[in-house]
Amino acid sequence: MRNASQGNSPKVLVALSGGVDSSVAALLLQDRGYEVYATTFWLWDYPNSPGYAGEENSCCSVSTAETVADQLGVPHYEYDFSDQFEREIVRPTVDSYLGGLTPNPCARCNRLVRFDNLVQVADELGVELVATGHHVRTSRANGEWNLLRGVDRKKDQSYFLYGLDQDQLNRALFPVGEFEKSEIYDMAREEGLLTAELDESQDLCFVAGGDYREFLRVVAGDEISGGDIVDRDGNVLGRHDGLPFYTVGQRRGLGLETNVARYVIELDYENNVLVVGPEEGLYSFGLVATDCNWVNGRPEGESSFDVKIRYRASTVKGDVSFLDDRAEIKFHNPQKSVTPGQIAVLYDGERLVGGGKITRSLD
Image (cartoon, rainbow, N blue to C red; front, side, top):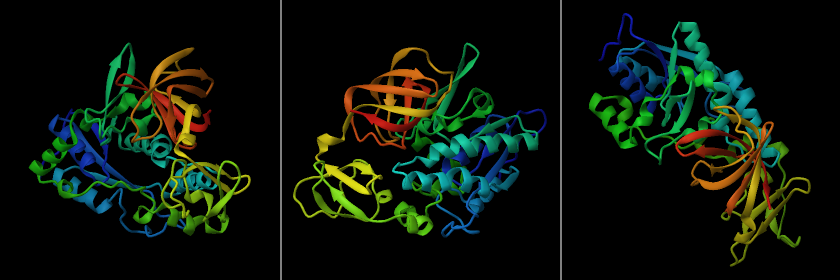
């Protein structure tokens, strides 16, 4: 067991999820001389939280976090923010699906729940700095903080942190962003941390088993009804189980008896119709994003940036016009499956400029 630094060392509160990244974040900061505190948020004790009332889940494990904190010899604090999480994340996610959008609750959670509460808890504990296990980096220039992509591009998580502001970045540390993921596991194994042998989760934290369709059936099944699947000419091709169970660009699971490849082109909620068509119907020349956040302030005029329209997507070039809290993006080359509800973010090289929620595509 390691001993936490004491005395005049800078204090930092680490959001300890029970995963390898946050565990190594705490380890690295301790090795660098920080006085480390750890906290784990419990977010799933609310009505209709399937399978999580008082149980562990695929994202955050309180028991694992407690063990890691003990291994590192740091104090560990648990807080229940379930009510806020249900109000700010779960219900809006369900409403988005019911309204024809494909939401990104992880990005919303970081913006509205996790970082605000992390700073609040740090204030209560008298701790100046906060840290997470996100694969991102920061730099400071001309009196402002920049949020940069992580060294490991395959694990870079800057996309999910587009909603951070200067006050939050002024207090935040992201130590694992300087390393490849393989190096993170090596450090955890060398230290003998419990999380060194755990697989990382890819599921939504509040969706048992990762099946969001089953989650929607449990919490909103009476609000979902089946309807027709049609082509772009209005010809009925089959039946869908409910529009929230589909997303733009989907090909599999449509239940159509045809040898012709068909993709979900549009979710027509006004008529409860699922519109399908050939792959070329998925391409758009641009998009409009709203509810935007700009890490270093809103850029002025029109500029060219690297654009990412999904977490796993590669960046593409686009010309961006900025109006109030909106951004209109015109791609240099048409892009496939621009999906309302997802997040579009902008980069200037390594630096995350900001982003917002996609509201519609541009033909």
